[in-house]
Structures are given as C-alpha cells and as structure tokens.
Image (tube, rainbow over all chains, first blue to last red; front, top):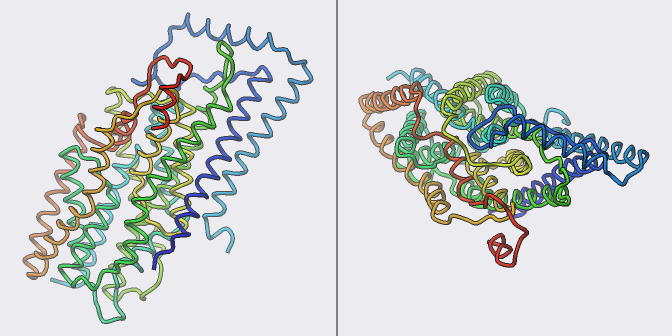
Length: 110
Length: 396
C-alpha cells in the first residue's frame, strides 16, 4: 500500500515553494537594480572558489555600476516605484518562508 | 547482561551516531554559502548548529516513522529486543567508517536503516520488518527525492538567472543573492534538524518501546528529543570546525544566484518530506540540488563518470550496512559474549572516528560530497551567448 500521491505532494510543494521564493527574491533584486540601487555584496571571506579582485579592479567595477545606474532612462518617480516594488518583493518573500515554517510545525496550529 | 545496561548502551551508541551525523552533515547546509562567500565559515557553522537544535524540536514525524513503522515492535507477537537495535547501530556506525575511510559518498541515514533492517532480519526473522513501510517511506523517497530536487533546483536556478538578466555591461545585482543565501542555508540547517535528528530519536524511542519502558505507538519523549537535539547540534559545531580547518583546499565555483536556488530547493524538499514522515538522506538531497542548479547555469555539461560514481555510492549504502547489521546481530545472538564483542568492535570504530576527527588533514568528509556534486557539472569559464549546441548540452 503505497501512497503515490504523497510523493506528488512533496514534489509539487517543493517546486511551488522554491519557485515562489526564488522568483520573489530575484524580482526584488531586479527592481532594486532598476531603481539604481545595485546591491554590491562583497564575499564575506575569499575561498578557493572566488576570484580575488584587486582593490583597483573592485573600485573600477563599482564606478562602472554607479555610472550605469545614473544613466538610467527612468524618472526619479519611476525609480521610487521600482524601489517600493523591490521592498514589497522582499517582504512577500520572507512572508512566504515564514508561512512555510509555520505549516510544518505542528505545535503552531494544533 | 543486565537489561537496563543494554538499553543504556543503545542510547549512548545512538547519541554517538547522532553526533557523527551532525558532524558529517554540516556541509549540507553550509558548503554553498561558504563557497560563495555569503557567510564567514565560523558564522555559518555556529548558525547551522543552533538551527539544527531548533529544527530537532519542530517536527517529530520522521522519528515516528522509525519508532512506529519500519520494524514491527510488538503486539502481533514479534518482539524486537534492544540487543537487535544495538547490533543495527553497530552495523550502521561500522559502515559509516568504512565509507569515510574509502572516500565513498554515503548517507548516514541509509546506513542506519540498513543496519537496523539487517539486524532485525537475522535476529528476529524477516517477518519482523515492515517492508511496505520501508519501501514507501525510505526506499522510494531515496529514489524520488534526489530526482525531484534536482529538477526543482534546475528550474529555480533558471528562474533566478532569467529574472535578473540584464544587458551586457549593466550591473545585474546578483551579488545581492548572498544576503538571501544566509536565510536559505539557515532553512536547510533547520530542515536537517527536522529530518536527521529525528532518526536517532526514533531509534531511542524504538529501544524504549522494545524494552517495555514506553507504550507502543507513542512518539519520542521530551528528554529524548532534547538529548538528540543537543547531540546533533554539538556534532554540527565540531564538524564545522574541522571543515574550516580544511577550507584552504578550494571549492567548486558556485555563484550566489545558483547557491540560493539550490539551498531553497533543498530546504523545501526536506521540509515537505519531513512533514509527511519521509526519512530522506539530506546529503543526497543537497548534492542533487547542487548538480541541478549547476545544470541551470549557461554553458554547463555533465561529467557522467563522476555522477555515476556518486550514484553508485548511494545505491550501495542500504544493502551493505544491512549486511554489517546482520553480522553484528549474529554476534549479539550468541549471548552476552557476543554483545561484548560487538561493543569492543563498535568502540574501536568510534575511537578511530574520534582520532580521525582530531586530524587536521581530512581526506574525505561531507564537504567533499557536496563539492564532488558540484564538480559533476562542468561550466565554461566565460559563457558566450548560448549557441545551438550549447542548448543541447544544457538540455542534458
């Protein structure tokens, strides 16, 4: 007696939740860059897998990013909207994660 | 041999197993964020330990699968004894050590199930194993989960890249995925607690039931949950320190977007499975999602030989540890002398494990498993625009 639907539930649940969380966060990042606030996050520690940038090179990259952002065709207002959208995406994304955790903890909804 | 002494022995052994489980599995959650530089290794390891502790308290479905499902613990006349569980644990720990020494990828969860099943078949008879539950909650999830998580991670990676894709020369802000990785890898550590810590809880509960100290069909007691949670958390922390010591070796290049997609898929799959009581191998799930997400990047090709090696190690674990468990059970059946022999063999193995854990240079650990999974996918250093042949490669 094997409950095949249970595997389908797991597969769909993980597909759906991953897709939602990843899409929302990616969309948030996209809107953030559109708004001209490109998140530049340096690696916390350089491991073997990360190419170490020289400070000169890093400064050059940052300058290029700033220049690209300032050349945006969007008006300040549009940028503001994009920024709000980005924040909304991040909030929705964390809400989705929290809801997922809430669902799997029996003690929270018994 | 005293009845309560054997129960105490089993509990001690189970906690040691739990410790080694956490010890080997730190990398499941923390290999990808360390590889992308999302977190400092020290922070990552501490966070993983705390979240494993928390996760162990969240859900006890998997523990119930083990204590109330796989082995028929009584009622219908079949009686499993603590000696059998003891033999099963010895089998699992011995197989874990062998795979570790030989550098084979393996799953400590499957070793545990194999050992228990083998010991039960020899010690009680094959009718004591609930094969339908084993098939439904261990073997089929072991085959299906790596496949689905691979597909999920592949699609999630595609999504992450396509949503953030911008014209060449424009900043895409993908470094921002490093922040997200802190949370997604934390979720994986939490999920690990809801699945792996449960396995030991299930074994201890099974022992308590078998020795008549707990009612049939009840879940793990609070002290069992607490000690198991602590054992896996301490194991995670110590294992992490060893990983930090060996970090210089270099890791597969994983990009933040890819790491985030892989971690999210891993966490979602383990959490959903834990919720339904499926006992997954978290190592297999984490490895598969790293492979899947690697395929989701442009210009990726599969190294099939390496993928085959990893898959072989996965398939081998359950039957091999079943044989180990059967041997240990055969010894334990002789009587007290057999148990002492088992114990001597077991403590020798544990002592060896401990000695190896103290060594700075480690030839094989779980970080290696995840890293091997990363190397299964080959990615060109400078991806061009996808040509027709590239698309074919990606489709692989």
